[in-house]
Length: 254
Image 1 (cartoon, rainbow, N blue to C red):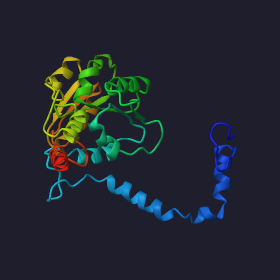
Image 2: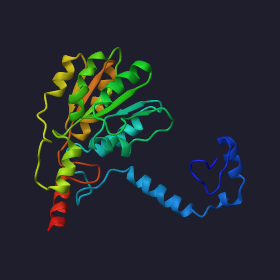
Image 3: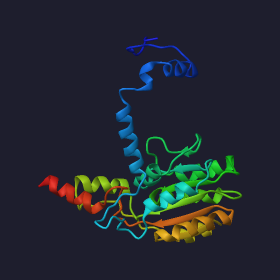
Image 4: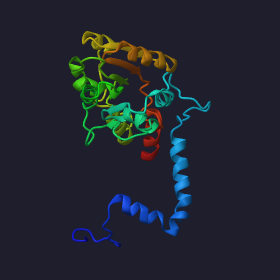
């Protein structure tokens, strides 16, 4: 112990034993970081509520993804498996979904795009009795979305966030070079038609109230499903817009 890293206090113990020993210590009953923990918990719980991006306290988009995710958070069973691709869209499931047991989330390493759809298909093949929901952006779906053809049986439900751009790269463009867009716009196909061509259930959602019926229909279809979420391109993250980023960058440069 201490051969590689030099700890202040080295303890060799199994987890159950150290947990029992620490629980018996008096400082644990009233730790010095109790107030910090309460504040951190309060910040986390506040973050579970959708951001209010307009003076009226609502999302400016017809499709409020924050409300969609909070509905989904309550709808998903405790053993549902969530897979995610890489991209700014993943901020919505990562911020608003919760996991009440382990073994529920699969995500890419080092931000690799193209992971979400194949991972969802593999998860459903491995656990056919569990609900599998895959989250992917339009750019990621264009990389490996054709893998939906390999889905068998009930298949996963793919939520496809379509903002017609590589959102993460566009965000950094606007931050460093406001208004100078290069190579981040996408010319997308008709995603529902493409999904149907592979034999999947397909739906397009453009308004918040359309999501719940589409999701329930996808479950009832008992086959692979793709639900296209028609995002407002302005909604670049869960907390800000492209226009706000551009204004901030322009103000910084001046």
